[in-house]
Length: 81
Length: 237
Image (cartoon, rainbow over all chains, first blue to last red; front, side):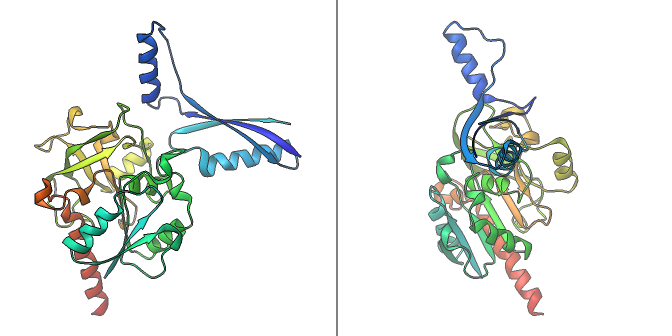
């Protein structure tokens, strides 16, 4: 069965996010004051799995082995049919 | 004695490393395309700087998952030397051969300039020709070079003497101005547990001839050569 999986990778709480700081600064220059700004990366992946738990398990393995670096990142997985 | 310099798509300091080893240090060196793998035993492998795979995903992340890394892990388990420079250091961190990660600089821009380093650990195959706390001048050229690791890892590195180099001021003190990318504890040269893998962000191969401004980096390569010669002699006796 085909599943559509969305994986969001973000920095762990407390990790410095220099890109977010630069973007927030640029927004402020345009008149958009922001209280907080975080950058995240979204992967949208379609693949075959027997059921939803297996799809989630595969996505988790992708995160652990390549998409995220456990030293600095956390990840969230959404599984859709 | 034979060195290998691994070339990934996007490596761009491979020939500099090859030149310094073969022409300046006078050791036999092979430039190896990563798909060839390690076809024979090498005394030392250099993973050079550059932008392997265009720094896609994270700097070094994709090169770290190529099959040649399995050969390199075997090479390391046999006690032989690996030096990762800049992108090579990022690849070593991404492959787990050294702990932690080199990530985006605290001020997120590319920095290319000479910096001062303090040799914190001279008792390694890569630094034995330096004195303890010697200050050397070597260039950096990176945007993702800020060393980050968990608190227990940093503590372990500190306690076990596995920090080879730290960013410092010209007189060797650790001031915040002398830490160009915001690395934790100024760390920019990290050893693995067995001491035969060194990952460093600065470029010793760009500072190996006085005519280019500094030859302070040359001793990294000469230390490796000295170590290999010593190991060879010890195994003959």
